[in-house]
Image (cartoon, rainbow, N blue to C red; front, top):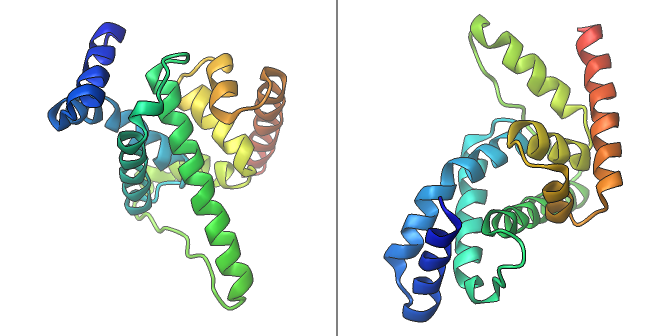
Length: 176
């Protein structure tokens, strides 16, 4: 979506509470946001859909706060990033509160998915920051500068996350 079209839709949403305009924004960004969450949640489609929905709800409710300093997609990914980490924190708290709770792994049948599952297993070995950096940089094809803005850390930290993630994933893939 062109930036001018994007800004026109945002203006219509803010000034006229035009929900159809916001629907066009959702249509334009939903595939990328959903893919972002699919990678962060390691393929959990239901959770990805829920997080994407929450992201768009929060974006709609806070659209007046969008200043246009960063691109709209950066702003939207930042909301999604915060939404994902809120979910992660909530999960950790629940596991601490209920020591008998276990986190089930998604099963995916079929030999044709072996490579995808191996990469997904390698992603599971990364910490949350490394997995987010890898997802944004390699899968979402975002530049390091934008990844740094989304994660609100210096560019050097993103480069470190990527370097460590590549090393961890290479070691895992080499052993498997």
